[in-house]
Length: 239
Image 1 (cartoon, rainbow, N blue to C red):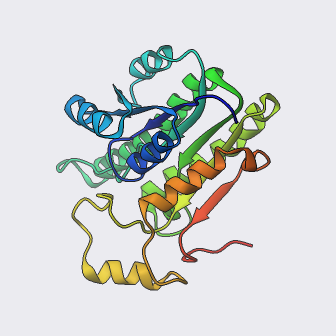
Image 2 (image 1 turned 90 degrees about the vertical axis):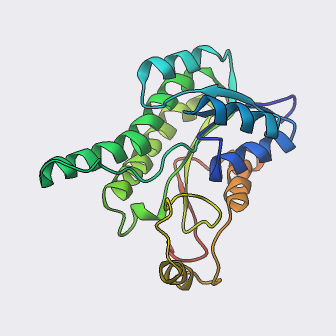
């Protein structure tokens, strides 16, 4: 690849998204990150040397305005998402419905809206990547179901954009240390159990996911598309 690439990372203010943005900045790309908090987006963008955009990926008008900022795009990374939770109160069924809606909105529909809006801007040789989860394979509940649907949708997306020379893949991390994914709910016992499931007996890091994203956006990965790439230390294996 030649020239300066334009990269958009949603959810780029923390965790995996931030690590991805940092990796592309280090390569000299023009990197844009999104988040919901104006103060956070501004401060993180300044720290990284990126450009910050406030955007709620579940808001169609906000996503349309985001897409209007770009004439062309080389790499789209959908890293926004996380565990959705229902607000206390209401009946059991109302609580279940609210939880499912929160996870579908945050982990599936936001990515669908963003990718749909930006895919006309993707250049030949470009790539679209979404961050999935090991939870799509087991014990994921409504969060895992949303991530599983993301994998199915990206497989269809790959078939759609492939003739334009664009790849589309999902990266599915296992347990990644150094993020706030568990929102303070991680215990020592749970962490040790997750690490014990791996073959290499350690947690993953945001940087490792960022390097996988970077590879999938490279010249060496042009024939990898329509895939879910598992990065979990062997906690879940495929054949």
